Length: 186
Ligand SMILES: Cc1cc2nc3c(=O)[nH]c(=O)nc-3n(C[C@H](O)[C@H](O)[C@H](O)COP(=O)(O)O)c2cc1C
Image (cartoon, rainbow, N blue to C red):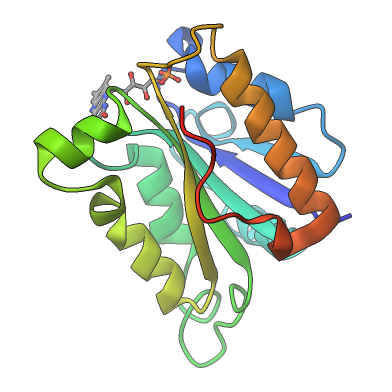
């Protein structure tokens, strides 16, 4: 079974609806490790060696966060700055992300169509820094899993959470072949 690291960075998890639902659905999967940064590092002092070890031990790294001001949350940004370091993620000896699967799981306040029709930038445009950062480290960046607060099924995000768990299960079994061009629309 392939191993998955879900790095979660929600600054206000106690009031979270969607991220909480997603995490509750996947945290019991045996091949999935959930690393909740705001719980682990309330003082913002990241254990870089421990985080790098986690990355090395897993095949897929999922960065999960609520989209805040068209960006990631502060501790996730700090985590990337400190953990994707010289001679670990890039530089002459920095090969630890080479060939590693990386994807985002983000939750957004509106819906995907609004980004396309009103914002003037697609989500894919806004997420380019993540895509290029992965490429810079020779990781394999995959299509993000996006859940909008304006959900269409209205079952408390149960459908989305089940799809997320299903995808992570498929990845465990099939690796890269589990990735699809787009996830079902929600
Ligand atoms: C400070 C802040 C900034 C936000 N910025 C955005 C944004 O730029 N784009 C967006 O779609 N939603 C934005 N939102 C909405 C959140 O993304 C949304 O409430 C969150 O993803 C829902 O997930 P949760 O239930 O796990 O908190 C913002 C929310 C907050 C609190």
